[in-house]
Length: 448
Image (tube, rainbow, N blue to C red; front, side):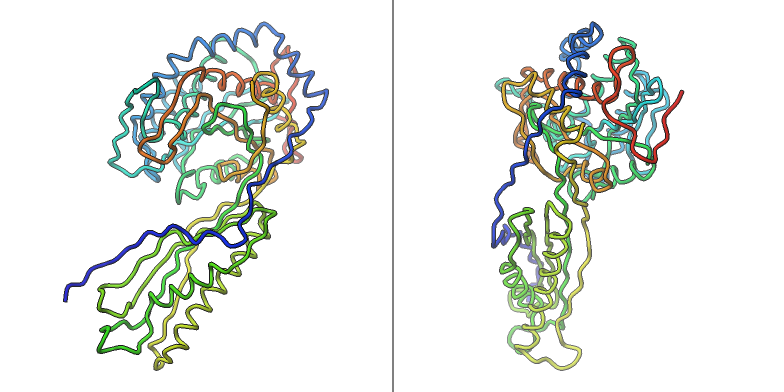
């Protein structure tokens, strides 16, 4: 008898009561926000910064290629973190360091009495160790795993730091530059969670992800992920017929999960993403396992759906045991293990940080700004009540999370310009504009 392990990847049971994508309202920009950016954009120092971002585009593109070719698999981001922190130091943040979680952090201090704004992009990619990450140019695009998500964001942060320091720009508030770990896969946002544990004085966040720059993410989709293991006695398919099967119990559970209904608002979803188990085609399975993903734009809906799914799993196991009525000790049992926990949250659409990004996009983009939700590093501050947004890193990209991922650098500098404009309005520029972002209640003023 030849035993073998069978692992089957399933497309999900995706989902009864399918919720449509939600459109978030785009806020009106207040006169105060508009006036601040109008004044900023009219200043000579701003115009010089924008020109220098444009001029730095070829160098930033070369650095993008360099960083893309430094592998950064989940939980193995150290080499890229070391490179990024070395660049922060070379560009003037001499106290830059790698923290205990593996994040690369450097603080560009303001003149005082301003807010502290985190600007970040994630170091990690989804690709396993050994993936060929060589950048290959073709038809005006650059192809390489991870080149857009999120290596381009790292390159943009370094370009911002370079032009700010070369022009000796003094911001009112502090800028906390972070290349963080743990955004992808089962990284569980560990890097960003550590940043906000260790830096409770951060007043806001502008995170960078792929995109031309005309969209703003202001809602954080929360998720819980579970590994579920089923166990039973197992036995020969003929000789031990009558014993319950771990795989059959899992199948019954999946069938019941597929009947769970979710609300349309907030959008809430689930999927059984992978399954596996058994030892042989002619054996009653003694073990089986599956992975379940549950997501929602609202924490109460996430928890309610989670409860229904756990009840469905228990009911499926009970049905399998009831079907065979096994002797005591031969029943199917199951265990669940939480393997992913991303909190849900939202930055109010009328908040200053959202208005600022919308104002900049309207002034520069050919497309109208749009607001969206998603699961990103911004989930962490949003869940803490800290204003946070995600904006685009500039340039077009596609094929994210595939080995055919690509980046089109045409006019990529525009996204970098819009992002830096947004950030400067939030932290303020000495002698030009005061900061729009306020210190959070309980955070003392930062003085120098």
